[in-house]
Every structure is written in structure tokens, then in C-alpha cells.
Image (cartoon, rainbow, N blue to C red; front, side, top):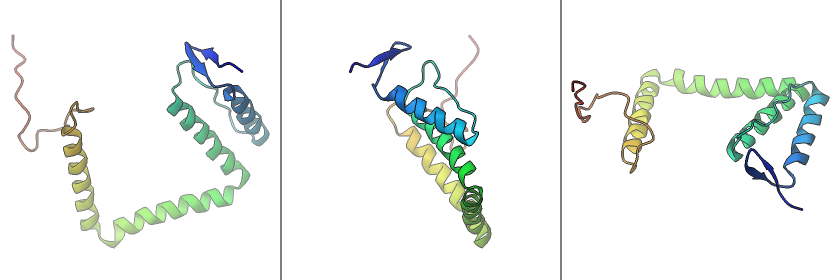
Length: 127
């Protein structure tokens, strides 16, 4: 069985079967089906299918879904409330760690957001 092309990209033979299965399941549970976009990458396909699966699980068992959300919310609140100063310090340290990791890559994916450490070169805008 050969792979079919969509938007210039070959799709695996079972791609359409999985999409049809997900669409049928969405219609069964009353979830709005989100079809694949024209130039959707594999990662975007995976994330879209996960969103649909979560929505279906929420419809299948709303109490379990609400309990899971409450548990996650409680976990975040525990971190914040047990030591607010420590939580703020952790967030600042984590942000600094991510900034330094980003700047140490050969081609940083993002520019630093601020010049708080004074390491950014001054760029003249006048010609």
C-alpha cells in the first residue's frame, strides 16, 4: 500500500483510517471534530489528536476530568502557598536558567527579553 500525498507531503497509509476513527468517536460523544490542516506537521497532528482525546475523555467521565483538574490545581497551590517567597525565587531561577540555556545555543531560538545583565550590545538605529 503506497502513501498518499496531502499538500505535497506523503501521509502514512493508516493516517486516513485513524482520522476517520477519531472523527467517528468525536461525533459519538458530541465533540467538535477538528480536521487536519493543509500543512500540518506530524507534531501538530499528534497535538490535535491529543486535544480531541482529552475532550472525549471529558465527555465520557466529567467527574474524573474535574477531579484531575482539581488535583493539578491543588498541586500548584501547594507549591505557591507553602512557601510564597521560595516559589517566587524558584520561578526567577527557572527563568534565568532558561534564558542562559537559550543564549548558549549556537543559534538562539529567541532573543533575550531584557538587558538586565548588561550583556546585550547596543545597536544604533541611525544611519
